[in-house]
Every structure is written in structure tokens, then in C-alpha cells.
Amino acid sequence: MAQAVEEWYKQMPIITRSYLTAAVVTNIGCSLDIISPHNLYLNPILVVKQYQFWRLVTNFLYFRKMDLDFMFHMFFLARYCKLLEENSFRGRTADFFYMLLFGATMLTGIVLIGGMIPYLSESFAKIIFLSNSLTFMMVYVWSKQNPFIHMSFLGLFTFTAAYLPWVLLTFSVIVGASAWVDLLGMIAGHAYYFLEDVYPRMTGRRPLRTPSFIKALFADDPVVVARPENVRFAPPPVEELHQD
Image: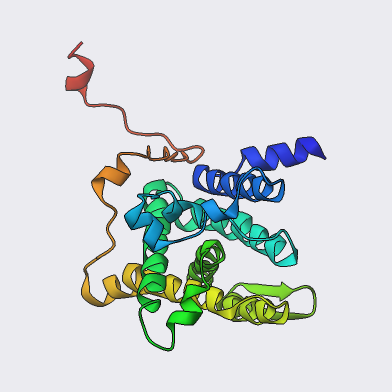
């Protein structure tokens, strides 16, 4: 059993493995009182005035108490982050990292702007961890890119992947989680899907092109081209044979 888990963990692509590891370590550390959630949550005042910039990252790592909702979001993170990185973003690790960076930046911006809007500021002030929202964004992007896959929810009913975010949103409400958190993830996911998949087809322009400095951080995966059996390639020209 332990060997199977280790093998499953090692086979994860780099971004999924790194994010999942950071999230699990952070939540275990908080559960054991090694790390205080008060040092992790998003606080714009502390970020700006006391230069606690790490909060812009750590609020995406903590999933609050380790309950049923936590287990589901860990499953979503491990499954859909892995599916996106291995399929839609195969060989494009930098693009996948940029998608997460775009989502994290947009979610942070929505919460900060929403906190300044009358009648909404109180609701947004309660959103101090955006880990669930970022996870839900990945679920939304995957569902938009694979809308016709048939799925089953706990064996109770079947549906296509296009409705997966709405099914999970309903489940979150049933178990008592905040609907706002998942809705933010859907908004960020739809913004990415529109700018990356829909808008380029409409205009021929791609506004979310990954910057070169981010691409420089990740080596492209080698592409292996399989050679068909019983196929002979033409010999090189005679001139090349006599060049040595």
C-alpha cells in the first residue's frame, strides 16, 4: 500500500506534486500547531504596511480545518490539477504555471476590490483564504475543456463534465461551505477559459501569452515521435555520403 502511494506521488507532474505537497504540509503543520493560520491568511494591510508578502502565496495553501470539505478539495486538487497538467498542458509546464498565476492574481484582485464595494465589503472581508477558489478554478477550466465526458457523483446520478462545477457548488452548500468561495473560482476559471480558448478563436489574438521569463524557468518536456514499423526512410543524398 505504501509503495503504491509512493509510486502514485512520484508519477505526478511537477506543478501538481509541488502544490499538493505544500498544501498538505501547511495544513498538517496548522493542525499540529506548528504553523499558525494567523500568519498565512490574506491581509492587504499587513502586506502593504509590514511587507508580509508571503501572505499573497500562503493564503492559497491553507484549506482550513481538516474535515470532509478539506478531503474533497484535496481530491479535486490532486485529480484535476494532474489532469490539466498531463493532458491540456502536456509539454507546456510554463503555460500551466502561468494559468495558476493568472488565477491567483485575479482572485486576489477580486477580493481586494470587492472589499471596497458597499454592501459587498462585509462578505468579501470574510474571504481570507483562497485555496478552495483556486482549486475550483482548475475544476472549472477542466470541465470547459472536456464538456462531454460522462461522470457520476457518489454513484447517485450521472451528468456530463460541463455541469461538474455546478454539482460541486451545490454539494459545498449542502455541507455548509461558503458558496462565495466556489463562485470566485468559477469566475476566475471562466475568465481564463474565455481569454485563452474563446477570444483567440474570435480575434486571432492571444492575450494570455506566457511571458518568456516564466518559460525560461521550466524546461519543455521532450516530444517523442514514434516511428511506424516496416517503414524505410530514403537514404541520404550521395553528396552527403562523400562529405566526411
